[in-house]
Image (tube, rainbow, N blue to C red; front, side, top):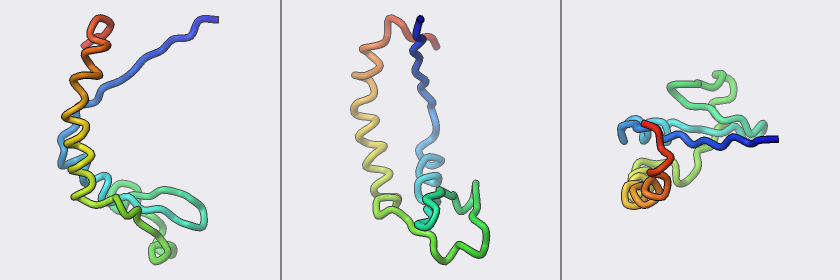
Length: 84
């Protein structure tokens, strides 16, 4: 059996990524994840939804900064097999 391995790199503007993180909510009863704009929860469960403590703009920007500082080193390891 031959396994095929692939990886994808998406280039998405930071503001869109932050919007996705900040709008994320979880239903503690079902574990289901919603997004307040892109995948809104049913109105009857909105009051019980929770938000992770690190799903805020400051934390998201720190994650993006860390990613920006490290992504080139990772890409460098795969440059010989990358397809653009």
